[in-house]
Image (cartoon, rainbow, N blue to C red; front, side, top):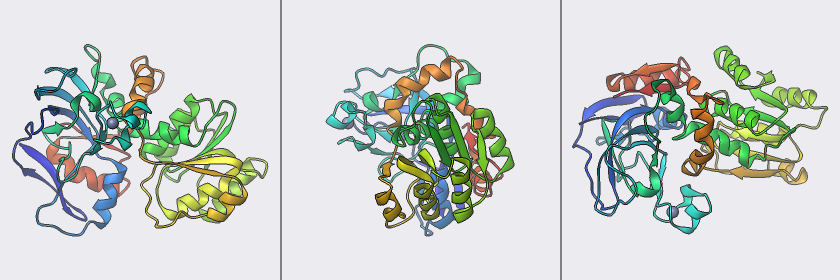
Length: 344
Ligand SMILES: [Zn+2]
């Protein structure tokens, strides 16, 4: 089969690889109908050292179950499924607590042992716990939004939950990438009265405003902090959704949070020590967040998508086939595309 392989920074190729196959009795084999390129895929695209073997990319997908192992009980051949970016058994203590990304039998797609989903097919470990089976036939127009439930929409929701967004509160979203845009959707959905987007790209800002952003701050650093404080009577916001992962974004997040507020961070941290520990301490500001338990959130978010109340699929502004994946990386990296969908 063919799959997307990253060999080093800026070096993504579509290669022939051994067919995905069942390895454990709890596995399912899924034919990919749609996958996507994630903002987090751009970090290795910027700095991965060159390798001979490469890394099989992709952790966001929807598809059809092709075969299942002997111990798979609930997922069936022919099921149309969402594949969240982490696999989980659905039965351990953390899965029961809704924190599937800490599953004791879990892990992530796009690693050496569990190759990624920007491919024709993927092996899915812990199929019963991992895969979310979609009901019946699904409208083609909903595919993009369903695909976001594998990661970005769940991640934006997690940022809002861990930033403790509440009805009538104020929120700020740092980052106008796909996760930030989904964070705006989530903050709106959870009832934030004022949603300030920190972003700079006109097309993304326009989409954020349609999703519910009430204010936009395009300054950076100290100027951004001053501007958010000015917009909020000098106090800052109750909830900050940090959707970037860079140290300066985190520092901004802490400094625009109101005393007693919270930061929900979902951008993979690219800093060794969390910035802003002193203002966070004196302001009693909670610093929460981590990898979103996207699997656990599907239950809540799916009806919103199916009934058209949210349209996170609008973050996709480019569709490529598998051969187009390398150019998809380039386009996202150069901020030419917000988010790229791959249709193998
Ligand atoms: Zn588990």
